[in-house]
Structures are given as C-alpha cells and as structure tokens.
Image 1 (cartoon, rainbow, N blue to C red):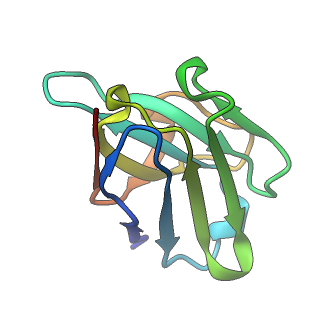
Image 2 (cartoon, one colour):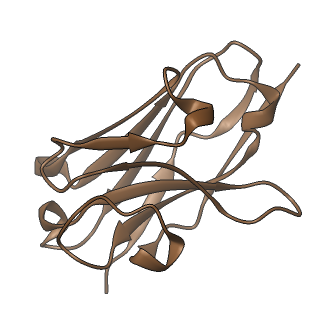
Length: 125
C-alpha cells in the first residue's frame, strides 16, 4: 500500500509563506506524477499543482501561478509545495496525491490513485 504523509501546514498571516511536504512510502514513487489539491469547507476539492514523474514539467491552477511552486526530490520520495504571498483565499485543507498512471501531468481528481490525509493551511487577513 502506498502511504502519503503531508506536513508543513499552519496558521499564517496574509503575505506569509509556507512550504508543504509530502513523503511517499512506495518503491516506484519516481514513476508517477504527483499533485497538490485543496478543499475549503463547502467546496469541491480543487486542483492546485502537478509535477511530472521526473520533475521536468509543472502545471498550476491560474489562481496560484507566480506564487506557488511545486517540486520533488525522488531520492527522498518527497514532493513539495512552496507557497508564497499567501492570501486568505488560499485557506483550505491541502492534499498531496499520486497519479494513477505513469504518463503525463494530470489535473483531475479521478486521475490520482493515492491521497494523503491533508494538512490545514489557514491564512488570516
């Protein structure tokens, strides 16, 4: 079983930065794209960012472009989300996920097979 564990969430003020980490337990971590999603109360889970298996391709939802950076260290089975210039609108539970397949950089929830437990990010004004 693949286990993903997030860390790094917290309570910050608008304009602050956080760095989320997600570490996987699988032997084949390096073969899969990884993604970050977020979910605020009452909302659907939303795509935030994704990175290809090798780390060569990254994609972001428009609302975080220029502020968030996804990266990975396959030697450590870890994916990161650096979040700068945080806004109250970024408040949500953030989840990391591993893609179901080994090709591409998925954006859809249904294209990810394994999920972490989530970490709360709260941004106050």
